Length: 111
Length: 114
Image 1 (cartoon, chains in turn green, cyan):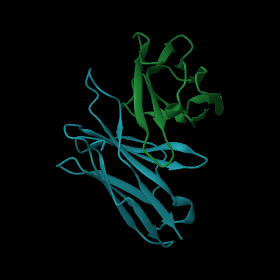
Image 2 (spheres, each protein chain N blue to C red):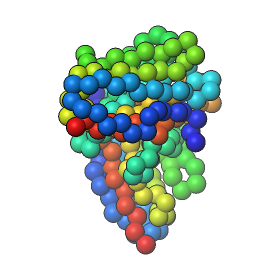
Image 3 (cartoon, chains in turn purple, green):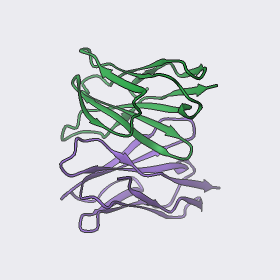
Image 4 (cartoon, one colour):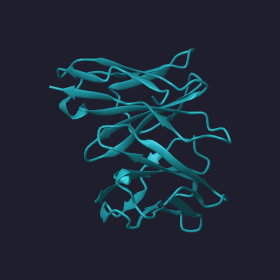
């Protein structure tokens, strides 16, 4: 079951904040976040595990609400380099470690 | 360089043909995953192998098949190609240890069916 991401697209000015949401109808074991720049491979940002703590590095952080099977990615004080498409990938409880990805959120950061 | 190697980078072939895409996982990673990315479908999971064994299957067509060899490299075979098979095909690997870094993706193979 593909997770649902929102919004589909976001346009920011440098320095602004953004939140990207990911929700699933399945009980999840983990949520991954990836960023893909045009023509490149997706790059791993972070993983949130069931029962784990909120993760973050630099100005990008994420949370996982196990009761709602929802995750949010927070980008604060956005930089031009944050532009790209963000995907969440969800791993179901009792699954085989395979990730099912959402359709992505296209983030554009303008000067 | 992510450590996951995919070849070839680009492939142009005619409808009805068969192609093989190759993936060498990051050193030490036992799991290999194949994904298809087209503009309107995002990253679609095709198949997963773990240490040579098929572990999970997604929306993989019967015309497609894959295997993982003893040296852990994997091949994705696409046959009776159709125009709609044109897409970016990514391979990813992982070890899923407690200190894991998620999936590492290769740079992909862009397949164009004409």
